[in-house]
Image 1: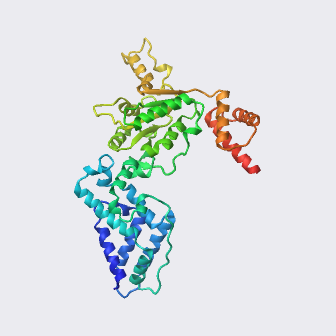
Image 2: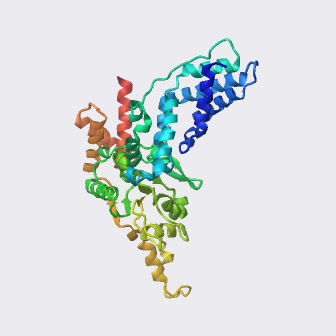
Image 3: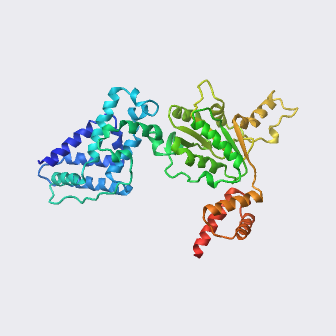
Length: 427
């Protein structure tokens, strides 16, 4: 057994000795690498080890499927890892972290630094010798695409301050990996490709946009922000405005959690999961309304008004609705002199009608008139770099509104998308 294979044994032992960053290897690439190491360790002497060759091929395939280098993989996993060190430094100075935790972090970073500098030629040589084959497995080095401070630092155990600052700014775990999340199957799930819409794309409702931006900046500054109901006509850009906030402020620690109406009963649980996380959260409920005898609004009421448990200052609710009164009311709901089933029937009706008032802010989005509609069309056409005479653009936009979905921001967006494709086909 030569020195190369002895070096493998040292690497294998060091990975097993990780104290804080073991979860780095819990994903597909990490598991494939550990399986490769185990296949080398469990080889049968003087026998061709096909399992070792297969494990090497699988590890290479997992890297290739994600188009990521081994170095980029390690750095990426370190920067999102959720462990006692990364958790504490998000809300505390590095100088306040216990010495034992500092030393454990330095220990792990030194090991991971060694893995980062591990030449693939060495891995190929290990596989050749362990498998007892006359050839070295094929080697391809994927290009490093990231350019973070870890790529530039020779000794990772010397960059704890930079690492702590990164965790403080970007978070850890799922909140570092995703800026948009959703509540599904009783857990938070990341949204890999959130809507990329920008605030600059939304025009026509400047006062409403300015108010919502100001409220969001209050949240990000650590002050008490208000829950907001965005009420108005379909296609006026209410949902797009909330999504645009995420794209504008995610770099400042803003995250969005989308909750379906059918999951509203989980709101208190969701808030409890978020209250001690350093990031700031918008709980986004789209197209909110309640049917008669729908008790899920009680869970929302607890979040809006609070309970014995203190309110989470890093969490606010932004809800959109086409209804000013969120709980549907029928004429039969209104009390008649003959009603005897409930003495204070009017109190019940008023509670339904006033539910929307429990939001601190209600922003109204009125239907777009022709002037507003055309303003949106011109703005989107400019954003899309459409070179069309203004008169022609307006004429076609009016025709589109008449034949399709009327005048609204959504209709304007659909018109511009169609027009952009149509003009592209011509040229």
